[in-house]
Length: 570
Ligand code: ATP
Ligand code: MG
Image (cartoon, rainbow, N blue to C red; front, top):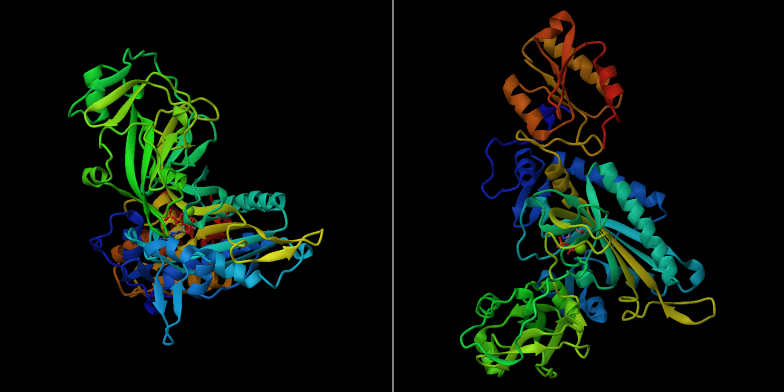
């Protein structure tokens, strides 16, 4: 491809709102252009990277027996009503009407549509299992679209759905997909971790995320320093800490006027924070109505909102003010674990408090706490705590640490979460009808472009891995006005094309410096420079990643590159 004929509007200036390297270099390098917040156009260079990633994903999935389909993007709302997600999904779901007042949504994920495609068409266990996928546009009206392709509103996802007759078969496919995903991310050239995850709005049990570890990531991952354990903070577990003995010597009511926080209490009573039970009050929003939720945990712990949300199966949790609590007759700052739950007020106690004794908590009366609290077992218990750095690994007993990362893939054991409400059933071996048991598997295909740049760049621009680089060679004719240089570059260009080596040829009238800047900004693995040395029969090859420069005889140049191809370490 000749740059003189290409559409490559590179820019020197860093766009104002681009904080991350991937965002900055993809815009400046002429890969993408913003059309509207979270909506991007792909220029020829960006489209080439997108297609490369897409074809790696497709190749590995097809090899694993998955079948590619393409589903409607504009989806009738009825399907979403059938699954119960029409209300539950919230504002990320973009809803629209057609000219006949029909209600539609822009697909943010396609469980409903895929189940609809399969129901009635697959009727027997003999036709199972089947794994169908697409690589297509999604739309999520994200509250904060940002960081370019990392968190868009419109983005490209690979979404796959498998249908099974038994739980075991679904688990087999889930493990297979884990292996296939690992191969995909390795081929894309990324360093990643597979971590335990929360299942979010998609629903279902067991799920794993594939996370690229980079400082720019929005997700907090809890990793063990010693073993393989890793989990998203939303799902991370820890071994129960061993607390130093501190008998409280407080029994019965303790006067604590105006003392409402754990810090103040621990100072006043001279006891460590873990001796206290704190209450966090939230409002839970449901499809129909709202409830107050009181979450109880140790004074030394913090509430993990996603775990809290899951424990009360709500759509959303929002903060409650002291006034809100007062109106409900709840003593803010003094809420105790024996608060009587009602249909309007739910109480959930953290698992680690089960059967604890000699604790101090609120007395459910203004100005009073109570000592000698025994938690017992008669509560609703759930895991509520946010695991901290330095906590103990639940698998091996060593320390846990935080890392930041970018979620690039997510696989779920879905079960019958969608097949049941959508009434998608098959006949089993015994002639009984049963809902399909499903798995679902996603990859952020466009997010991978940004993740790859975050993972591999320097202060000059992108540094693409060969497997997804838009071109392999950036051929520079140093000065196209010099006939010797020009004709040598043209000859090498023909040779490269003949060898089917993907080459972008900088044949512009521009100066050498500008061409080198573009080569570095775009980040093509090899630069091949035809300059003054050509008179002595030499060209120069620049390796983008190491900036190493190698003088090679003009006749050997193409063979040299052919030799290097595929040698890149992952
Ligand atoms: P996140 O937690 O980042 O919002 P999610 O858990 O909602 O993502 P999934 O429903 O699991 O996402 O979607 C599958 C994959 O699609 C994700 O692993 C991610 O790589 C990608 N993805 C999700 N949302 C976006 C987005 N707004 N922009 C780009 N890619 C996205
Ligand atoms: Mg996810």
